[in-house]
Image (tube, rainbow over all chains, first blue to last red; front, top):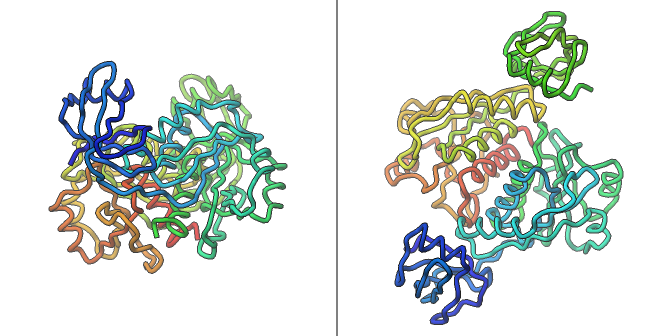
Length: 239
Length: 239
């Protein structure tokens, strides 16, 4: 079984060669010492995973040809992760974990206590792709650009419920046991939490459900992973 | 409210000065610009959290005197985390998250597919302390030295059940809903998983319960955080 998995943003079909990006070609030839005829697994986020054969590979590029399907396309449940970006390494971590754990879309949000005013969307998207390559997933969650929380809430579709990890609820509290399935989003605040105005608004919205993540104060990255795990086990595809 | 929290490994009581370590003294005076009379919060893992006053602080050391209790001692549930060390940054991360999320003891285990033959126990313990300082906890989980899994299982107290995150169970499977409380340990494997011999032994042990963490393959650090969250929400102090 070919161990190398590559995300390739082209339609995949048996016998149809697809080009490698320069970085992938370098990785395959320079790092992994792959040669024409060697096999890899490829996916594009839509067409499942394919066993593919290297046609040619060098420093500047190359191509692979899908041979046969090796795994069906498997999309995650309809769960978004909205989070306030924090320090670089921890933001990278959140995106990686969200992709691994099966978030369908990743939305960095700017809150009143968010320090960063911009993010490197392309770098975060690359992290999501790499996580999908590593974890055997066939889906890559799109990473949005940074959006102010207020604007996100202004345009929110009320059919999508929000699971709000509210640090003020620290201590035993509501579990996810009684919640209904359907479209959801998890909302994680920045270090320092949400502002009073944000909290007032969130509390007033009928589609927002506050949830506690225990009696200790969790870092934002911990809270994101914990909330994803609890949602997936209660309402998602870990059931 | 004093924002700085320090772990001090001395008995804490009102009016009894306790010494600062050199690193703490440097952090307080050089980084945080604290002066005698300024207030910090201190804890030792046993006596709760105390508001304390800086007596003297300089490059070489200093002391603080507890004034009054600011939070009661709060021990986590009787949950151990046993995990196979992986790359340095991810191992550090697992220890940090375990301390934040309320593991009572952290046991690095050497498995057949574990690459590292030693760990820096002192460095990992320092990570657990720092996580407790950050997350407002009053308890610091002890970090054991690296122990072979086989030896750990030879001496295992059968009253403590093991929740085994078994990647071969990928896909919807048993939830934690029906499990009983009491002493537990979570067991997370290395990248590459457990060996066939280890899997055979684990499956034969009556106190081991395999659990699935969904249809995607999780990295070891993700699996650790996810399993901690699910256990805490089902059986621990997040209920």
